[in-house]
Amino acid sequence: MILGIAIPGFPGNQSSLNPAGPAAAHIEHTFALIFWITAIVYVLTLTALIFFVIRRQHDLTLIPEPIQTTDASDHLAVRVVATAVGLTVLLLFIMMISSFLTSRRIGHMNGQQALTIDVYGHQWWWEIQYPNKHEPFRIVTTANEIHVPVGTPIRIHGTSRDVIHSFWAPNIQGKRDLMPGYNTDVLMQVDQPGRWRGQCAEYCGLQHAHMSFYMIGESTKDFDNWMNAQMQPSITPTNPQTQHGQQVFLTHSCVMCHTIRGTIAGSRVGPDLTHLASRSTIAAGMLPNTIGNLGGWIMNPQSLKPGSRMPPNQLSGADLQDLLAYLETLR
Image (cartoon, rainbow, N blue to C red):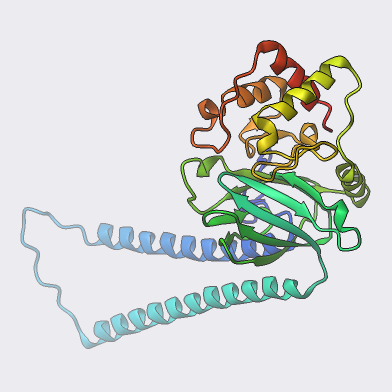
């Protein structure tokens, strides 16, 4: 649905004109109202201009005679101008009131009880945590994918680990800046299942354009199953290839930056990889999570995402293949 008009085949998984939640719906309605008001005013103004230009056609080679006015025509002109000014002021007030009501409706959502999700912006990826007040040792940590139950209020508790970022999932909610040293809360809700793409909306450096994420709306049952799976530690390798791949991970620079729960790897510099294979993308939504892309990313991330904080890794072909086989077990 775009401006009240359904467009068949329009995917709209990153568009404020295809709302998937109440906050985005309020924003889309206000945008549609402002768009149609300004569009109609533009068309009427342009039509009037064309009409009078055609009506007052003159031969440009001649000097036109001065237009004679009367008291009646002057009064008519004053009434037309006054009416136009009054109508303009009225329309501006309508748009202002609509914007105010939208902000108020979105603000009222903040009083609801909600599932809290912590979001941390990094150059250039998103760290996602699901706090667990009752069992703090079972906190779920992932990257660049935010799973949410459909129809449940969600409170995004965000901040930045380096520079200013802006968390924006246009189908779900308006953007919210994440400032280093400050905590920001924004409440949102996903009302239909699907994958909704989000993006950093504040220029944050070289790879700002490649700092995306996905909000994944799913049923309560599917969400609970995903959460239970994510709480589990990594699977212990069961064959020589994956066992060697784990050793490659733990004895090279990988262990200096990443966490894999259930192993000695516990660094927080880069994304938590405990369930890496369950994610659909890598490099903050830049690449599909395939063996080929993952191998290229491990060996030379700078060729794919220049400026990223991950250094190249010099591995032999055999070590790389075993490492990839191990990472594929992290589901």
